[in-house]
Image (cartoon, rainbow, N blue to C red):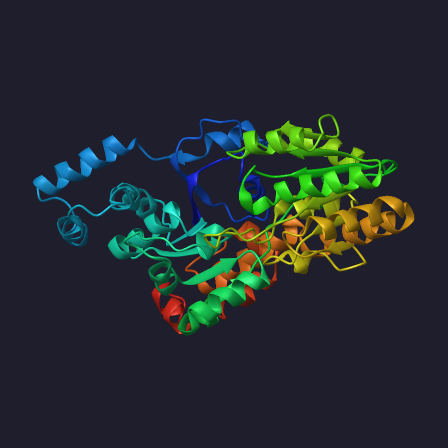
Length: 430
């Protein structure tokens, strides 16, 4: 019996390996979730997981198949009333596939005894979960991350709708928890901070940090601030500071970043290294002396929240330089695990890099303190346990016997449920 279901737009995904880690850890902690992927993954995942894990993922049919089936049921008047009315009112509005996805998935969840669905991102999967709740009474929660909550959208099911109908909302930092609580004050009591998690032990390294190796990892997009890092490297070169910088990733700004590197005469010293899998990143973390991610706010309001690559770099024992964007100051303790500089300020960024490279003992101490902080805050065992307890206390999720054996606190969480959930799950009289 599945205790709950994870619902993803696409699973597993190269750019969302933290989701794979969380699912695996939930399974390890005895929660036995059903994993549903709306779309098939066509790219490499960047994550090593057991073959049986991949085979256990349930994929929905193609959009054409789901739409055809829903229309057929509607014509035959075999579509449940709420769905028929929703489709009838929809007209030419977009995002209709979420309705079809919910119509297709609901019977499977009911057959598996699933009463609660959890999605990552306030996007496609969360909006499908919204309709599952409307059509089948299956509750949902979601984890909000960054642009999915910070940027406005015009979907028929809005962020406000998602937050209002969710049993609870998790979000990846205290900053975004407070941001959502201020935006939706009536829902503030059901919004919680839950950090993304990593396998901290995989990144621990005793490799030498000698030399000027600067590493950064991320999509080649505005919010990563790589243009400002390249300009900071130009300043370092002008000052005669020895360094080498690898920018790992890919994305729409690749050509403009490459042109900037050439124009600054940094070819060979600043390298656009292309995408790397998780396994390929490990030796890069180990061989580098410093991690830099100069996050910025985009013109449209988009920004990073709690970049996973920063916690990975901390776990690898690297001192980190970043900016005071969203949840980043929750990760970096100024002068103890790294340095925080103003966004879009290449001169300040260059100064911090030069300081780190010229004081290797201080940098090493910052790296070691960062590794300890990553173990305390971001271990996947800790972060998955926090979400698990929210699912049991606020979602209609009954943990299985394996989960209860591993975590005695779950039984206490089970009997601290709000009265409406205790009644709905038949536990009020127990």
